[in-house]
Amino acid sequence: MTDQAQVLAALDAVRDPELDEPVTDLGFVSSCTVSDDGDVQVRLRLPTFFCAPNFAFLMVADAYDAVAAVEGVRRTEVVLDDHFASNEINSGIAARAGFAESFAGLANGELDELRTDFVRKAVLAGTDRVCRPLLAEGRTVDDLAVLTLGDVPQSSELDRLRARRAELGLPASDASALLVDATTGDAVGVEALPLHLRRARLTRVNTEANGSVCRGMLSHRYGTRGEGQLEEIP
Image (cartoon, rainbow, N blue to C red; front, side, top):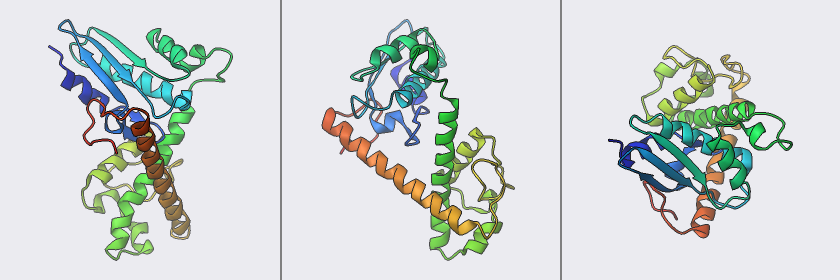
């Protein structure tokens, strides 16, 4: 029989596309109920009433897919509460419609390109998280230019970087260059490395700052811990 823990574990894989963090860790899952028959309802909430509808749609759609794939789930319902586009998003997800159909006349197309752009940003941010400790221990930019992923000490951040690169079809094996262009997958040359590393650092700082803002706004709006959230909201 399916239980809440299994559903929340599946939701751990659903990320805020901009922040590259699980919706569970962010506190976005307000409730998760599972019946004895395998009917699941998940309710999501966001930091503000006016969070971007395309971001919200991606999270609700991904949550639906993640829950529906859990063994033993018979029926899936994912509901976004307290959002100006809740009706359109909830109706579209329930009907298994795409973003363009759900926002007929308002959307220019689907969200594949947007999702890809955010994964590229996640690759850049992840590059900084992996490279900063190497630079702090005395490695030089020239050193980084010849390192492969297999040369880097194992860490959760390295695993995360590999996963994001793999999502984009970029090289992610041990033999792959540590520093690659997030669009082409080509290794970054020594001359271009300083600019690449600055971009990576700026992307990481902006992403983490936005995450802090979102957590603070969610805390101010609701003041309650989300289902599956590991840490208390600030």
